Image 1 (spheres, rainbow, N blue to C red):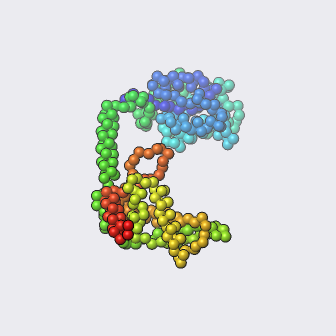
Image 2 (tube, rainbow, N blue to C red):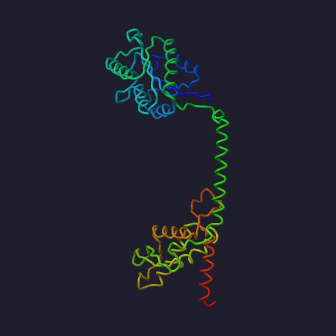
Image 3 (cartoon, rainbow, N blue to C red):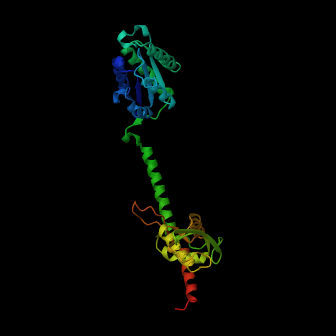
Length: 343
């Protein structure tokens, strides 16, 4: 696979223009992708996020130290040293190239400020605690970079970059095709299961005339906004009877919950002994916990399943529908109820 590596070049700029050009040429001849301050103003603190992003995307980091410490931030740290420290922090393989003889550097390419010169000396010492090579001039630096980077790549493998058409090998294509076939098979099986649903109710769980207590909040207005919490007790048959007809076809959960809330409000209004009466604009709302318990129980019984119809992207609601077992149970429940009702 034709793999290329992105290499970040860090250094001061105006004093090392020729050296940077030589390094970039060496990297290009190695089919590497050079990256560095040519992409952004090195002394602009607003560009620090961009600089970090480019370093993050790089496979290797090279720092070139000459006779200048470079422009500094308000904290007194040069951008070159900040870049170096960030590359170390991110675990990117680093290699330094330090001028072999500081006394041989032209006066116009060295720091006149003693404080800056001191900071450069400390930075050189820090860089030399890791892999470094000395260089004398631009041509020497270019050849040292080539040999040094070969060694760095060999001992520190990195992901690199590949062309999109090269990344898709025949083996990868075959593997993807196999995975797609498995996914399609599983989706088909899941769809078939969801369509038919459970054929028999799992009566190992509470159902029928067994009762469940639901927590609700009752709100309304009577001399101001009023609110009270309480419980209502239902059998599982009553819950299926209220919600089941709406799930013969798929129904969104918010609508089902609203249906149960309306049913509970009717219960409250018909029971003045247990609840406040005479309120206006009343509402009743089942608690999240109780609603969740209903959904879990009906699923455990095998009476409902998640809907599978295609919907718009903006429709985020969960849809529920009766399984075959749920439909059969609702029919038998309704038939039994009808037998005792005078029609």
